[in-house]
Image (cartoon, rainbow over all chains, first blue to last red; front, side):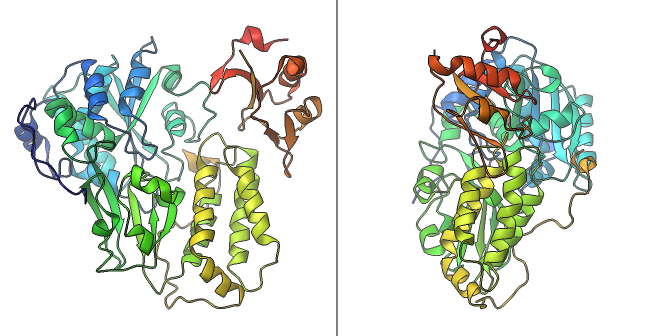
Length: 428
Length: 78
């Protein structure tokens, strides 16, 4: 097992907290300053430390943080940094919990990232969860009163849409437009907010960055695996219906996080609604780490793992999720606009008795037609979810074709927001 | 340097002209949107490719030097 949180190396720059959690400890500014002190400003050197630490983005794509920082720092023009807290997976709660619990770690990281790329222009972009923007506004005011911040931080709220946290959608919203993805030529790190080189970094990534600045790269690497160091926040939906955000070393077995031997499910969803279903047998052999998940066609994503209990219908769950994904298409790219509604309707038909014989072939063709043809990865992720649904719930689909369903409860398990967007105004 | 034809999918409105001008590299999907070959554009097709770029009614096509990097506007013109 790779659960070990090794003892701290004695030669490390600072001792640093040697136990988990590293991030998820509730602290107001006084407690935060007592525990950690002010942000350890050190300029661009932090990028090198983050590279040695092996910090990767915690928003889903897992891109190396140091490479993004370097690209923006070297763009040659005054940059903008954005802390992205617009976690939009309906089942994911980790960024919201981090922002409520330890906002000053995120805000320290935002300041340090701004300094590392040589700017004083920063934004914090979050969903308007009840009370959260006000709470963050107070946190920013308290920091200003204490004279902690060098970059001025503007708070911007995101519309409650699935794609609102996509990097280019974030930039569009901060620019005063709708939170819609755009074609990434030129990339955001060259041309983002106000046309400036822009660093969009997930809020959890920024919190890790703040602690790497304080305690060093080898402290960070003392948790996790050599290939994927550090800890990560994960939203765990267990088969008993409980939901918990945990901070875990990367590489911990899924079985431990979801308590699979005690609460065996019928299947496990890894990586959210752009993610992959696994059989419970397979999931029980895998760690929460990309190296281990890759052979199973899965990825950590933004750390959502969900165990579907026995007695629920995986097909019905997938039909609801895929319909939601089709509704959440921005409708800007022809293949996604045309393909996702057909895929959603096709999967719904496949879940009903006597689907037409060619439907499976249609679904597979449509999946191929939308894949890698969008400005963003929404079609790719939606197709990944569809394909793993067809692969994992084959027996249940056969039963449905005969007019049977093995579920004993038809209460929805995975959350899907109610309501259908009415107009473009919903993207603002 | 080999060139690659790319489409901005948010700008494309599915006129389909590109598939008529450059059938060697572009076909249309069942909804009328271009599926562009990942093959580079050889010198023999460069003229037709540039015409497809300049004639696209939605200005959605471009020639890139390498994946993700737009060419200078000078070389994208005919």
